[in-house]
Length: 343
Image (cartoon, rainbow, N blue to C red):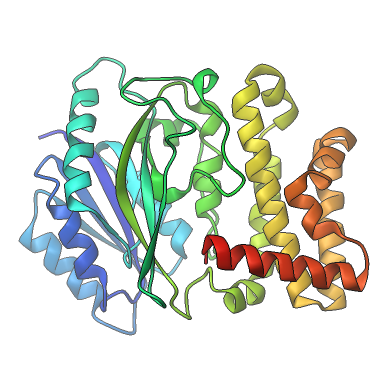
C-alpha cells in the first residue's frame, strides 16, 4: 500500500510521553507511515518502546536507532527513509488532534490521487501551556485563502507574531529532497531551517483552518525556555547565519514579492531573537557576538537590506543603543512573551 504521509517522530529519552504522541498518529489509518527515530536514548525505555510499536504495527511503524545526532538528524533520518507522499515532523512530547487529523487525511488522500499534488499543506497549531493549563491557537485565516489551491501571489500579510512553524506545515516529501534540505547535527532550533529553506521551492499550497498540532510548552527543560535559550544562544546564532546564507533574499523580493516579504519578516524575527538572548546573557563576549551577527548580515545581504531589517519595528527593539536601551529591550521582550505566550 502506498503511504499518503510519513510522520517522523524524533525521540530522545521520551518514554514518559511518547505513547500519547504515537497513539494520536495511529488514528490516521493504515495508509500512513510513522518513523520513530530513537536518537541514542540511554536513560529510559525509549528504544524498547520504539521497537514495541514497530512489532505491533509492522505495516505502519518503523523504528530507526541512531547514535545521538540531535533533533535535526532525527528529521534528516526521517526524510531519507520516508515512503509517504507527504512528510510531517511531530515531536515526541507533542500530539495531533485526532478529529482534525481525520479531516487533514481526507484532504491529503485527495491530493495523492491527483497528477500534481500540492507542495505544502498548512494547518493551525495550538500552544498547550503546562504552567497555567491554557491554550493559544495560531491561525492563518487572515493570510491564506481557504478551500482552494493557491500560490504565493495570493497570500495576505502575516501579523507581527504570526509565522509558519514546523508545527503548521506538511511538505511534499520529494520537495524536501529536491531542495537539498539537510539539518545540522547536534544543534537546537533547526526547525526554523526546516520551514524556511524549502519555501522558494513551493509553488502550490492548501490551507486548512483546523487546529491540528498540539504544541506542549512550559517545561523547565524545553529548548524554548528562556534560561535554556540563553545557555544555547550560540546555536541560535548559528541557525540564524545558516538561514541568512540559504537564499538570495534580494532576488526573491524582486521576483516573488509576497514570498520575499514573508521571508524577510521571518529572518528579521530570527535576528531579533538571537540579539535578544545575547543581550539577556549580557557578557562582553555575547554583546560582541551580537555586533558580529549584524555585521555578518550586512556582508551577506548588502547595506540596503541590512538597514531595512535593523530599523524595522521588530528588529529596532533589540537595537536601542546603550545599557539602558538594552534593559528596555529585554523588558519589552518579556512583556511580549507574557502577552503572546510564545515560550
